[in-house]
Length: 469
Ligand SMILES: Cc1cc2nc3c(=O)[nH]c(=O)nc-3n(C[C@H](O)[C@H](O)[C@H](O)COP(=O)(O)OP(=O)(O)OC[C@H]3O[C@@H](n4cnc5c(N)ncnc54)[C@H](O)[C@@H]3O)c2cc1C
Image (cartoon, rainbow, N blue to C red; front, side, top):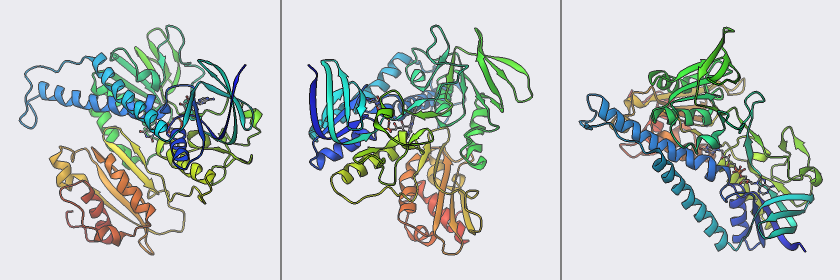
């Protein structure tokens, strides 16, 4: 007979939304069960944020060493021979990072006294599901449910994933290749495709990018994406913008170029990264009577669905599909269930592209400010920042930009592009969330030499008295 568990809280999905919700609920003394069909950590930890950044890091080191071996030598460092890449070892190191974090999440859940079930949850009612575990089916009856089922890669009908003998892979496939492909075609120039495409270009693959729109990273303004585009062009990554992917051929990918010509791009693998869709089907959502907001599960500003006691968080409830948003919602919902008064109302959510160079954005860009709001914009180039130059990072066209309301100097948005700038994300988020004005940033003594001095200078520039430009 199937085992039955009764619990205060059932969390479905052990990604950064679900596992954080479960840990916080456990800390708050709620009897909590967490179910995941795969490894704890979700998309982010197992096949997304973490393995991609590990691969990007290793690829960057390899590229630096290759440059030191090939050219006249940089920084006075000369390598006598080209570095050897044992890609299996690189992947094993990356997997080790993932394993370590997966173990950490498992231990944290245990410490918070969260019971975990490995298996797929299928709902028959709003607060009742069955999990097919290795030891047989377990029925869970819960007073409260948090759905954190995440998202899945979007498949193109003409380029299906996983066809036997086929070349088409998703980001998950790209993070588990056995060897560096000689020729990799990336379909979709969003952040996931470019992060992975750039990493493989650094590892020696001949990379071609195909994008239906007429520019890369279409969600960002062109001023921000220009340095990335320049890097791609300088490093021989071919770009086909305004092009349509037609289908797989034995030689590679057939496309229709912007001017209507058919062309076959040679490829060992075709990486399709055209977006992600909420994982809202296939686990009994229909039986739960939940409302939808387009493709996403509809929730209010407490992440509550119209069914009392049923909440949804993370990628399955909407944009931005980012790990830190999922975690923030998870923590909040656990506290709401424990009786706290909370709502999800961030001023802004910071986003980072780990491309070459990196991009960080939060809040509004100059073109996104509502009509009628007058702004001042201050922009400071990293070419004038000592720390950037001392890290060989000032010559990629990178800059930091602040957008503020003219009337009261309230900061509405911050953007930056440049090498190593992802760590500015915390400062950006803090300034927006604390409601900083330009004078606050100008008045903070920023440590020297750091990239954050560029943020200070951008505020000074907006105030009309930058020092270093
Ligand atoms: C290559 C790549 C790189 C990325 N890089 C970044 C980055 O740098 N920064 C960033 O913020 N975001 C990044 N993301 C996005 C990030 O991974 C997601 O936003 C984040 O994982 C969403 O968290 P989540 O908890 O909502 O869902 P997920 O992490 O998708 O977790 C959902 C979990 O639910 C489980 N599940 C689903 N249905 C069931 C069911 N019925 N029963 C049991 N278990 C179920 C799944 O197995 C999965 O483990 C990246 C994504 C990819 C693919």
